[in-house]
Image (cartoon, rainbow, N blue to C red; front, side):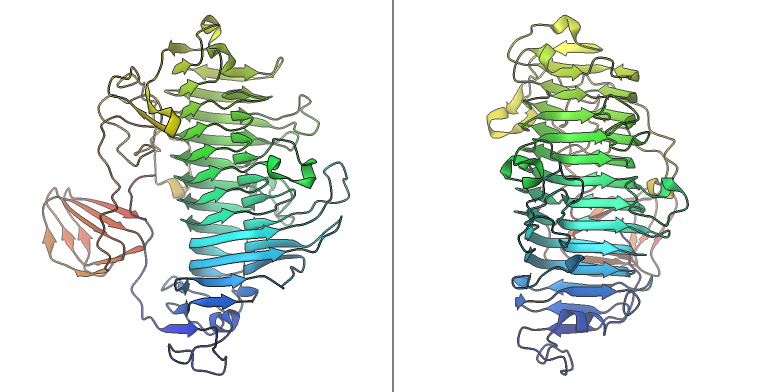
Length: 570
């Protein structure tokens, strides 16, 4: 739940025909976004009117910012566009750069056309949104980012260059780092990334939520979570220089592939993951969709002697990726060499795989996987069932647990070699041709799963206690448990916690005593001073924010469920 305190609010405006000498109201707006941002106080809203703005916006926390009493909000009207056409990046620079800033909301903007010059060793790095410094309590939502391009022709065989570009780049480059950040319902596409990623968190970053984002048609990695690259050069403890404690939920990574043409890989490579963890830890991937990428998911560590750790992968659909569905472990055989890292404590439960194939397979074991568990997955390959899983000879793995999983393909050849309790049966996906991987009513995957114990040793306060090993909702935002848990990413005939039938209004002034089960759903804001008593269950479901104001109280055996973005669960 995202909470906000009550505060006074003033709205100011930016307009394409404005003037920074104006008072900044609706009829006499300011002209430049950075100027407007610098005038804001906690709780204020800056509204960017419909139009196109050629500006590199800087939000510097040493000049402006919100507080615990109220965020500052920069919100675009429909078709409010920041266009980088004619602008050039100077070093690492975003169309929006956020540095040393706190309590900021960025909402409903389009960012496009930020491009480097052509050449070989291009050291400038364009980003749609660039966040760094000592920043925290940030929300970025409903942002469309496209055509961010590094046009370097440098190749990875040249160790003297490393061109980059990012749609969204968050870099924890200080000892204090970046924490308590949310990215909701953003879209990144058609970016030329060179050696980098469309959406990256790198370095000293703690406590994050990435939900409902769509990253597609980029020429390198979709989502990336990185540690140990030296991004935080001032971190006293090397363990702080890694992304940690985050939820990555119900996002889409589609057609992120180096085969779109990426000179860094010689326009080949097939090595771009839809979702990639390289040295991060304590991250949940729940209910995501990965298709058309080079690799669906990858959990590895490129740094020798380092590890990706404590990953929970649940309720995802991974289908028709070009090289492999899931690849785990360091990619180098030599633990002291490049790709010599490991993957430790990796939990893969209730995912649905379908026809991922090339150099890899549905599930690919590279090197040094330690303490991994696979349960309730559906693994449906292109060819014989024994081709659905591959592991490197002498992979240096330890303590791999294969529980009950469904295996299927074009034939049952080699089924005797499958690991664990292998159910070799057609799972009866509803319609794999249309990519509907829910189960048919007569599927043998219904009510035959095995529930795993809660995770109890993730100690950050971010988690709020024990973690349900299968989550609370499935791929469709239905309750994950409907009796005995099913196999795969979907729970058959379950109860939905998600609806599009919202009132398009704010729900202000809710008050009184509630003593039964009541649900409030809205596309707007919920403000409540209600008293919830008896054994009542109250559900607040908002796509923007929920304010529990003075007078609100939950007493006796009552229960409060509060969901942001229209759907419950993680």
